[in-house]
Length: 244
Image 1 (cartoon, rainbow, N blue to C red):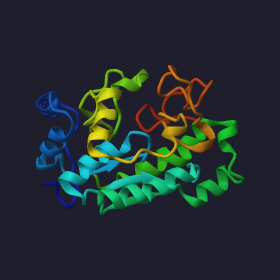
Image 2: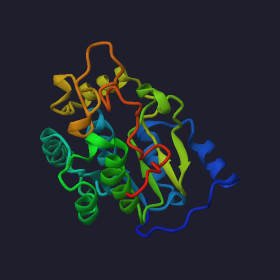
Image 3: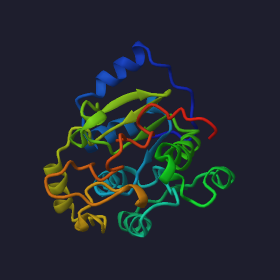
């Protein structure tokens, strides 16, 4: 069972390597249950975009322990359908501990006064509205659960079930799941889809930087389309821009 106070976990070393190897063959709800019951992972929280596939992982979390903190980064740029989905899905699944985390209002006033920073620098916008708020939100957590999957490609293609990143364990229960498996599980569990999935959005982020994709296109091709960018920065090396 996850403990209530965070503690310092070991830096990446042979101990962490052994732990990762111990759980590397587990997936989905089996992995979640094992890690949540292992006090060695400390205080565990989940981070969810409440996007196209999010309901499956959130349903698994609710099935094991509905009180596990779930962090939602309310960037101020989400589709209205996403903010509505957070409320309706949380209620349907019985999730008891949703943490809304928003960008710092002072920083937004300074660096994105009229809300168009994304037009001049998507990296700066992601850093301001996602990366920094998550860094603050994860304070007090030793490990966190992510919904990333290998079939999303690019940097995610070699994803492991358990990783060590920035002094925390990062848990990816659905890393090895395929798109077909996820669709089947959605149907079996009768989970509600994000409303935009039916409109051609297989991956959903902030509204200004997300478009629908055509049949046959890569699942994440609608994210930052036509830009040399595939991640917001949460799961990749931090953006090192100046003056923000």
